[in-house]
Every structure is written in structure tokens, then in C-alpha cells.
Amino acid sequence: MGKIWRISGPVVIAEDMRGSQVFEVVEIGNEGLVGEIIGLEGDRAVIQAHEDTQGLKAGDEVKGTGGILSAELGPGIIGAIYDGLQKSLTDLMAGGNEFLARGIKSYALPRDKKWHFTPTVKVGDTVGGGSIIGTVPETGLIEHRIMVPPDKGGVVKAISEGDYTVEDIVARLEKDGEVQELTMMQKWPIKKPRPYSKRQPTERLLVTGMRIMDYMFPLALGGKAAIPGGFGTGKTVTLQQLVRWSQTHLNIYVGCGERGNEMADALYSFKELTDPKTGRSLEEKEIFIANTSNMPVVAREASIFLGITMAEYFRDMGYDVLLVADSTSRWAEAMREIGGRLEEMPGEEGFPAYMGSRLASFYERAGQVECLGSPHRMGSVTVTGAVSPPGGDFSEPVTQNTLRIVDAVYALDAQLANQRHFPAISWLTSYSLYADSVAECWNDIVPGWSETRTAALKMLQLEAELEEIVRLVGPEALPEKDKLLLLVSKMLREDFLMQNAYHEIDTYTTPERAQLVVQTIMKFNDLAQKALADGGNVAEFRASPVVRKISRIKDIPNETVEQSIKELWAEMEISLVAQKGGVA
Image (cartoon, rainbow, N blue to C red):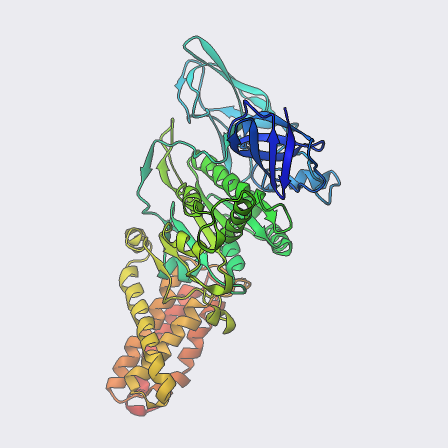
């Protein structure tokens, strides 16, 4: 036990702390505020407080807990709402706590709820770290697989089916004469990556339901992506769309320094939505970590690592997990504040010199892996982080450090947002290094994807090159071939890349539907090219009812879209052939 020697905002220096360890969790003051030791010098400990330090004074006691900041992992996580320190906000609100008092405590997992445990191994079996020993039906979408902690293993001496709390002993193992008692709950340090057997290449497509992501710049399961964009460009809505519709087993949304009203909107909307694949409530596959902007800044770092630790835990069960963080810029701002309080030598724009390595320690925990133990299984963690560069300046340090780590970038363009083109992802500055690795997966779903995607991207690039000429002489001065290019490119932008997140049908698009839409636009282009060669003109094509029908494909229900598009193809054949030679 020590006592406070100095306080500087969220940084507390305590003396008489000899014997403490770095990253040990401590309780500060009479209210037991949670803090973490980040430095030791003699008998003094430098502590970053994860709660507001207002009211503390020199001489207040500081108690070491002997443990480091860890996540509670077990049944009861899914559907929960946590703060950055894994306090259950759901339980606190149920207890009448509308506002979080300093030092308030709450278990992450319910201690009184019983779960039905069904063993998958029997007495006499030998199990190693990471092996699955039983299952718990946590939700209608997720079967919680109870695993041996990575550092344990041995011969099963006792295990039985029944209803247990997370603290009850469900199995006993024996190794080298030592008996190990297992419960359904594990604790894991949030800044320590969970081990796995082997890392695998990222070659499976993550279907997000967002056309520009899935079709133009695909993301692989186990990939790392960033969504940089200035204020008002739609980062939060884009991330919420990912969490809503991505075809993963489990999604984790980390609101790191987010505005409270945005988190409230996300939480409310998820209660009303259903998973497009199963028809069940999305709440059954979601975890929320709400560390809003009015909460202590230091807890932002903890919230990010708490989220990735939970993701790794479910990955180890053999699930595909998506984690989104909104936003890592506010996490970096918290690092800058702490660095200033510690009087560290500042780096670029005042950020600490270790910011890049800290960001990498988060993103590099993504990946697709072979899990430890038996049975053999694969799992993945996909990470997507929003970046909020001041003034939309992508040359600032947080964005640049992030771009060096991730393999897919969905750059949000303020000009597109001002034009009400959403998602405002720029097709000229965005990229994905996963396009080649998931090509086989894409072509298995819809043959011909690679060629169609390449042709569409080339057309959008040529349109951008023509824009300067159009600004100088106007579109009417262009030859008919270039006018057609502008028309088809506009159709690609407005009828395919633009997507309404709040439209019942348009909010989610399957890969098969996306391919049909692009094929329709490219088929229109091919037929129009032939009609031009026979004397047609673009003005007639633009006025054709076919163009208006293509723009309304977004409104066609999924059940009838394939038939409607094939009928539209037949109509295009007749309509554009009739316009050859300028005959309407």
C-alpha cells in the first residue's frame, strides 16, 4: 500500500510502492478509482487513472491489486454493453444508476445466472490448452464453446452436464499429479495477444453488404482496414453498416471517444434489426463497448484492447469476428494527453514517439489462424478502424501511421459527402491489397467478377481524367464516345456505388445482386457502343426509359431482382437496337 505524492490530471504518482509491477492495476483513494501502473522509479509508481481524478489529494492511499488489467471472458458477453473497463452498463442501469459514479464496480459477467453446460469430452480424455471441453447455448446465433485456458491442460478427471454459474467448477484436470479446476470463465490480460497454433493467409471474402467495399475494394476475413475521413463524411454510419450486415459470426463495436448520441442511436437501431442471413435479432451476435467522449480519456486505450481481446477469445472458438473501432484518432489524442502529463519528449504534432508501435500492437492482432487445441478449427479477427484527421488532412501522423499498417483503405471524400453521395468512399484514392487474394472466392460466387470489376474501375478512372477537359470546354464539346463514357460512369457512381443505408432493400446487397447490377450497366455500355457505331447518339440513350429503369434497380426486392434484370436486358437489346441511326 502506498500514498499519493503528486497528481497531474489523469496521471498520479504514488510513493511507498516498492514491490509493485508495471501494468499492475491499483485502486486510488477512498473511492477505489481504477488505475494502472505505467512506470516505476525507486519506490514511486507512475499511474494512469482510468477514472476522473477530481477530488483526490496528496496523501490518499493507493492499493495494489497484484493483477494486471484483464478481461473477463465467458458466457454472458454477447449482447452486453460495457464501458472501456468492462463494467456492465446494462447491469448498472438496471440497478438504477443512470449516471456512472466514480469508483462504481460492476461484474462483466453475471455471477448469479446459470448456463446449461454440455460436455464434449469425457473422463479419461487428454486435453491441451485451447481445447473445447463443452458448449453453452448463449444465444440463438452463437454457441459458446468452453475452452481450456491456454496455459492449462491434462487428463480429464471429472466433468458433468448441468446448470452452472461462471464461477462454478465444471471440470477437473490432472497433470503431473496436480489437479486443475476449470470454470466457464477465463481472465486474460487485455494487452497480451492470445496464442494460436498457426497463422493462415487471408483468402476468404468478408461480405459486408456494402457494394463499394465488397465489389470494388474487397476485404478479407482476418484483414486490417482503415476508414479515414474528415468530420461529416460518414465514418460512423459506415462502421455501423459494417457491424449491422457483415456476414461474420460475431461483431464487436467499440465507441472510442464517440459522441453519446451516436452510441445511443447505434444501440437503439440494433434492437430493431434482424440478421439478413438468419432472420434473428442482430443483438444475438453483437457486443458493444461504449467509451463515450465524456468518459475519462485514458479508458479509451483500454476500450480498444478490451475489444480486441474479446474478439480473439471468440476467434479461438473457431468463429469469424469483426471488430470496428470508432475512432483510433481519439485514442491517439488520449495518448498525446498522457504523454504531455508525463513530460515525455513529443513527436510529430505532439503525439508520443511510440504512437506508431502502439497502433501496430492493436491492428496486428487481426488475422486468420488455426486455433490451439482440439478439435481442429479455424478462426479469424477482422479489424476496421476509423481515423478522424483534423480538417480531413490525411498527411497528419495518426492517418499516416495507420496507412503503414493496414492493407485496405476506404478513404472518405468530403466533396462526395457534400454532394450527398453516400457512402462517401472515394473510388480514386481507396484501395485493397486483398483483391487478388479473394479473387478465387469472388469468382466462385459469381463467375467473371475479376474482369467486370477491372472494366468498371477503368471506366471510373477514365471519367476522372476527362473531368478537367469537361470543366474547360463543357460536356457537349466532347465526341460521342466520351459522352457515352461519362453517361455510363455516372450510372456506375449513382446507381451502383451510391447506397442508401436507411433504405429497407438498398441497405444490404448480396454479391450475386451486386454482380447483376454491374453486368447490367456494362451490358448497356456494350450495346450503346454498337449503336454509336451504327449512327446512334448519346442524347437518345440518355433519354431512354432503360436508363431510368437501371437507376431503380435498387428498389426491386431481392426475391424478384434477378428476373427483373433479365427482363431489362431483353428490353435493352430492343431499345438500343431501335435507336441505331438516330431512329427513336
